[in-house]
Every structure is written in structure tokens, then in C-alpha cells.
Image (cartoon, rainbow, N blue to C red):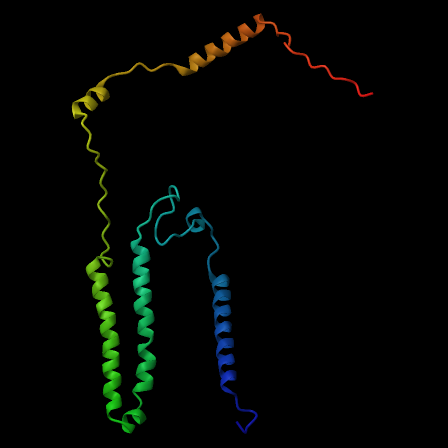
Length: 196
């Protein structure tokens, strides 16, 4: 670090961050500049993981999406630990210092991957990796009423009342009775004393 023109390690990280931000801004600007601008209802609709956004939003969704995402995240994060292990413990200086070092790190990583494989087998046996929709069945309630009673009720024809006509008749009847009945006098008339 005697040369003032030399970049420090933090300076290199700053340059990488600036280049990354510049590339992101450039791709967003180019996409806005080049992309077609014809809006239609399908393009303006919400995108929900490939599901058509029709119907009510108060529906039950399959929780397997969540389980698969968690399993993927778990194994993906654990896989990240293998790369630094391979770069650090694969250096020849460590192995040259002690020959047992390579075997120790290899057994350690084999145990780590073995635990991951046991977790994968557990998730597999539990059935969380199978992408099968559940069978929908109607609930059955044991009752002592025979099916013939339901069939006879359902096969009958019932007389349907014309409620609109009934309401019209009631309104007409109310108006005629309101005209005939005079308003009654109140049974109690409050008297207030004047303040002195």
C-alpha cells in the first residue's frame, strides 16, 4: 500500500457495486426504450404464478407451493456452503502441511452432505415432493334418515308464492288504512316549568 494510486480492497468492492448498479440501470432503461407499449387487458392484468386471475381471491391455495419453496431454499442455502469449503480446504498448502487435513475435510463434508441427503429422503418419504392434487370428496354424515325420504322431498312440486304481488297488496292496503285512520292525540303531554 505504498503506492497512493493503488486501490484498496474496499475500492475494488465499490467499483464492482457501481458497475453492477450501472448495468441494472442500463438494462431497465433499454427495456423501457425498446419494449412495445401496446396495453391490453391481459397485459395489464395481475400475474399470479401462472394462475389465471379470475374468480374470487378468497380461495384456498395448495400449500405445496410453500413447502417446495422452503425445501428448495434449504438445499440451495446449504449448497452455498460447499463452494467456500472447496476453495479453502482444497489448497495445496494445507494438505502439504499435514496429510491428514485433506481426509479430515473430506469426511467432514461427506457427513454434511449425508445429513442433507437424509433430509431429502425424509421430505421425499413424507410426500412433499409429489406434485399431485388431492382428491376432493364430499363429507359424509351418518344419519338415520333413509335416502327415500330425501328422494320424495326432492321429487315433489311445491307451490311458489308470488312475493312481489303480496308486497304490492300490502303496500296498497297500508295506504288505504293510513288514509282512514286519523292521527291519535298523545296520551301524555309534558309540561315544563318556566325558570324564575
